[in-house]
Length: 476
Image (tube, rainbow, N blue to C red; front, side):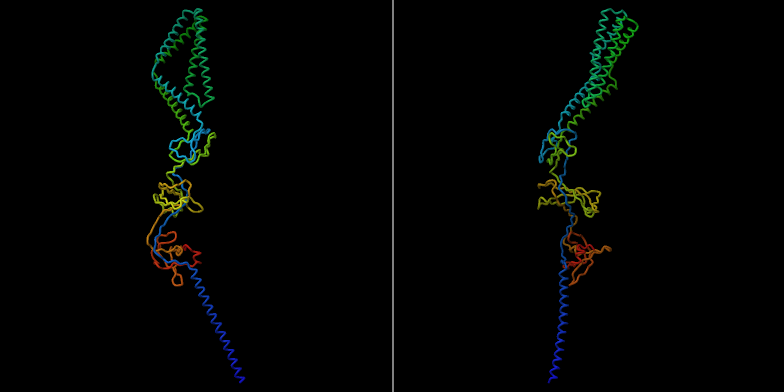
């Protein structure tokens, strides 16, 4: 009985041990299955998926910039001087030609008047030359010749006290006339040196100098005549008298002669020089004022009355608010898709909800490299609008360069391209696994790519988040 009891106890221990082993093995199997299921669930949870569908793709080239006025004029005074008046304020609307500000014009107005007087004198001298001999001048020349002849005749007869007194009086008067002519010439010449801006024309100075020389010779002849009169007639006195006759005859011949081609050309040149001098003076007067080159709005006024005009800062900045544009830059890939005249859609940050239209107006023929990227300048012109646009507002532009409708769309993050072969692959979910299917691509948009073959509507595009972190946008 005791042996039987011990046997049963031994068998029971083995059974218990066996049971424990069975339970341990079963628990391990269940644990492994649980871990595998958990890993599978985590793997599935880590997948990014999206069902392939049909839709539209619109490819756009976008760029940002600032709204700029189509016309902007930075107006500077072109002459140095003190600002006398500022006639506008920022925000004023002005018309083309309207004076905006002016300098002190005292010197310019004086110069214009002097140039007008010089022109009038040159024109008058030309008219006198072309009019031919003057009757009064001819009469004077003939009278001088008669006097010279009479003087020679008197010398031949001999001179008395009365003739000597007359000769002295004649010489004194001619000497005074010479001195006056010389004083006038010297005073005018000194004035021209001291004030060159107001100097008379060169031909006027030449005429004064010629008058001085003529007065000197006439007075000198009178002096010689006086000496001969006091000494009595002699061969020297008669020679001087004959010289005076010759001079009087030459003056009469010159007075009677018609103007020659050289004299006329000189007179014409003097008139033309005077007209040019007047144009220069009037231009300087005009440049002492700032006038609006077009209808517009005054944006900035820097000039202040009483201050010197600056050649560094514009006195007035004028804008044309009727037309605006954007100057933007696009990279070398995008610029190949742009062409002159393409439609542009523009949104302005300061005017939310407003969409403006425009067109591509200019594309730079050469690019500039910024941070290793080749960029091209483009100008986008806005269509006329009643919107409250202001120069300097930030804006975003979009140009539609391609468009497809009702095509199979695969998200860009599910596409990989082999850089060696150029073959594109779509990552698809099949069952619980992922495969890469070779595809033929069409138009690529910002988020989706048109697929022409290799996938169909309803397939599930999927990537592991681990892969997605490395190759989220299908860079291959």
